Length: 353
Image (cartoon, rainbow, N blue to C red; front, side, top):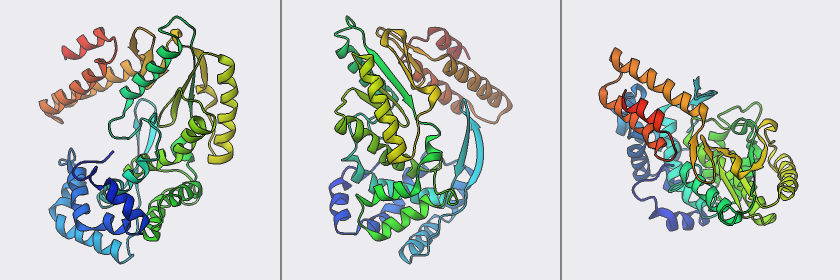
């Protein structure tokens, strides 16, 4: 998630401001907008739309500030396209002006919600991520198996079409539980309803705010499992989550509770083909890896995707569409993934490219 300068120092300040209805002013102030721009600009300098916005940067940021202050801001339409990563995903990309505002919002609002999120939610959060989620799952499994001497069962779940199913009304009500600034609520509603307003559901994958909204929405599920059901051995990354138990019967019972809660409270449903209960030693498929008690393997699909992308990058390098530095950065990012698992064969292929 967006962070950077002043993020932690704003925590207590934001906590105070949310109670005295001034958090909107903190978001739209020029200091925050320019700080958000600096964070947004990193890694995007060569993007055409970003470059065009930066030509008249001060004028554009002042104009955004004035529109927000005067109540004239309206979120723009999205550019729509598909990416294959590895499955086909429909991406909706906001214009630079709107994406800058998303950053500005998340910088200030995220700490307000961070203090209510559970420890074991790992997606789009500072000092979290996929590898921390895997480590946490393994810690649970090792503890319950008494160092792999007892059978441990794992329930793996996935929410069906999650981002396209988030209900706008429910999301707004969850935001209103923590935010009492009417101007900010109106702004967040403007952003949420800029996408799929007719069906009143869904948040776009391309928005930084969607990552925050996703965690706010599924924090209700986290709270239900951890606090209402009292189940502690639970790990979630976005809409994928695992529960670990010594007893299969316990997981079957809790699965029914989870399904009912999602449907009744959040208008979501579990993906019927992606609900699996299995023994840990059989290998748990989670976040691109196959996790066993004594080793971790890269999923076959993940291997194929990496090799396919490296072929594409190689062609781009040869044709001059990317430079050597870009190519090496991409290769090193994939080699970084392999540091967390056994993947000597594919590592050799990448290093010889």
